[in-house]
Image 1 (tube, rainbow, N blue to C red):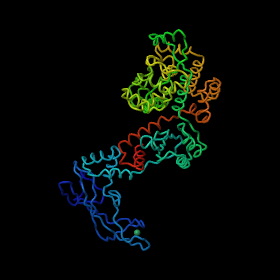
Image 2: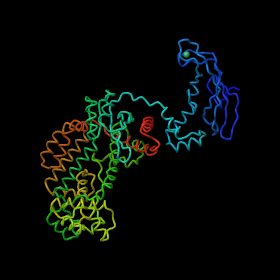
Image 3: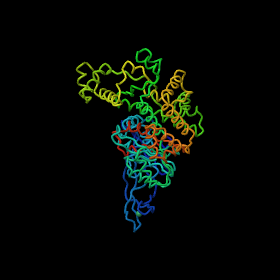
Image 4: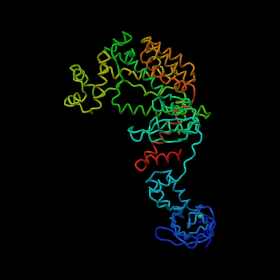
Length: 545
Ligand SMILES: [Zn+2]
């Protein structure tokens, strides 16, 4: 029986019969090809030695698995010098030499595997008539050749964590094509150097502000231009400003929010209230970490939107591309290039506030461990956990160290936190509502230093927005001369990495795409992890890229 259009086979292969079992359809296929080429010497041979049978799975038909009962030949090789005396018939258009899957089934399986994960893929393939184990599905990915990396001119480099920040690897992204080009199992200078040495064409390296990639790029690609990433730069500047607000005890002399209390009224009369420190009390480090992660996601979006727009894409198209509402795109687009800050809110009240006087008294008596304080107030009726106590005690201790009694809790829930003040200082005036504008004006009168900080900050943001790299040096000098310690140390940090920071003002390359790929990696890792070691993760990611 010749082949049918319903079940096409390559030239020279005939169907001899079809039968079935409860599980599968059996298709007997015989090769009619008279010769085959010897793999040892590439000479065709027609000298048949024997026949044998292979039983590969093929693509399903009408939802039922198909198994081929494939009769193929063994040939003699008659070339005297050839080491192969006997070889099996090659069917390169149907199946690989020792495979249990036909090529077309293999391709389908790879597609399923790329679109799913181990166990989910196994279930899906089973329903489609391809009864294969998840191990086979994952393994099939190794057989897909990886795309050529080609020439990488602009490289983005970042780290990714195997599991909750315990161990890190490195991800490399081509910032021209936005494709992942490699994944390294570790975050070390040596591995980065080795990779870069194999890619001498790299001309620009965009990286974070950490030392590993700085050293890696410097040693591995000494001629490449390094660009440090703007998120960390702006974050560091914002933190410097918040540090200043805390140290200098800057508070808003706000009649509206504190007039209700006697202290508030007094504060309003005395204009600048500098005698009491107000630190940002943000519960536990874990919560702070979550806030950071959320802000980083926003920032990546921000950079991505600006990048797409710089590439000529309309805001509407960007919204479609990134799956965002048009209003959201517009909001991000208009924003100043400062990493987004949490929405300002009054300093938080805490379950611990009722114990504040007691804790202060104990601290004054020299009881300095949070664990002991936790035990004591638990006996008094406090029901919270020890990490909260730890953070709270640290907060009180900072306040005391700053040389004053901490602000009363009744005030704490009303006053603006240093973070809120930083937010006010950072926003463009036009983006503030009327009340916020009034608050900003008041804040700027608190001290000349606040005015200086505000001006320096906005100059910095404008330089970055307008890519005025040649103005960075003058800005640094001015900031150093301001006499504000926090800005001085920010400048010192910039100085250590000056060239890369300057390029961040100059070139439009950003870590945005790299960060985006790290997110993709996280998603893939989540569905594959456990099934997938590093090698498989890499294969999967590079195929997908
Ligand atoms: Zn041969």
